[in-house]
Length: 544
Image 1 (cartoon, rainbow, N blue to C red):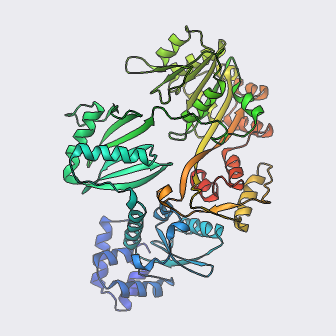
Image 2 (cartoon, one colour):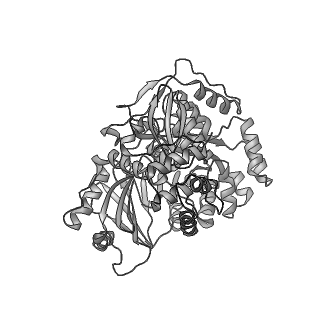
Image 3 (tube, rainbow, N blue to C red):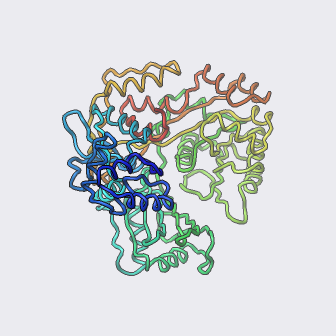
């Protein structure tokens, strides 16, 4: 449907007398400033003819089923079948069901990737895609209305004084288990979003006139410079149970704030409850060590720190001296010496002092640079056990990351004992989810993926879930998350490859022969065992 000087749709509409050649010229001029717009959407936006007549003729010319989508067109609860975030990404709305046919309209039916993604999701639910075409503005409007309906219980009253408004934003976020608050200046409003179980949910749109007061209040409680229009970091200590990290960034519409909510006295979860393989032998093999370093690898927000605390809880004994270096200390643990770094003391500075404090185990919040990495590995080489994190996509890439920081192959091979990678996957809300059997399509996807690594899934007596939504889960259908893990144990053979400067691919190939399995294998096992859904695993790991 892309508009060109000789667009088949444009020619067809003119030949049918729906539009004049002058109308098409107007549309062409408009597209010069909006190159990503399609011809039908441009004509609809400019109101060059009636929407009913336009959509009817578009269908006949393009050989597509069409529908003029409105809020009243949607006859089903869309969220029971496809999540709103997937709909937004694919610009699609499922609006009705006829037997086993799921009627879905797309803003662009030529987007094969989007169509295929929706088709597979529906197939996993035993439905066949019945594809329709509609206008992109209608899709956006209906999805916005549906999103507003799903978050109506979370909406924040934006009237009253600014201090009260800010307090309400924070307290509501805490009640809803949000990990982050995003306060984002838009062109005409200030949008407030919460990140809950990894997904962002819009909860309020504040009048643009209140933006400066809102920014001023956030800067005041974050101990930031009021007069500076520049990127700043701060902390909010107004709430007894929370340590809130505040970050401001200048945008074209004003200053954006991201606020990370860290609960001070959050309980430490058992390592097995996080999703780690329920095998005491594996646990001991990974973490009951000396003279080495264990690294947890994952992108930001994937639960690395939570896993570290669970490991510390497992290792914490009266006869063991454990010291942590963190920024900030997120959970206070009895029996452990915890150090919080600040502007006057870096990770590396704190680590040098700790080595003179006779520690057995050291937890280092994050390895960020060569200096910190070098001291951490030296600590591992001199009789200590070090636990830390790095930002990489998988366990094998920990080796590459340390190399890029400047650590020698010898130091890595002699000190690195275990590299573990993880991803957090949303779990279904037990209050509103409904059990169902796996479809043949789901079984085939899982079987084909696992067979590549010599694994054979067993579906006997197993089930998955249909996701719905209720007030308990903010109408998302999901509540809480569980981690999928991959564990790379550094065997003698792998040490040799690293010491010789071997590539991460060489390490991976040998590790696979020795039992290492990538993240998605553990995730698929969790699907089979009813812990997570296949759609959520694919959303997180893009495995099919």
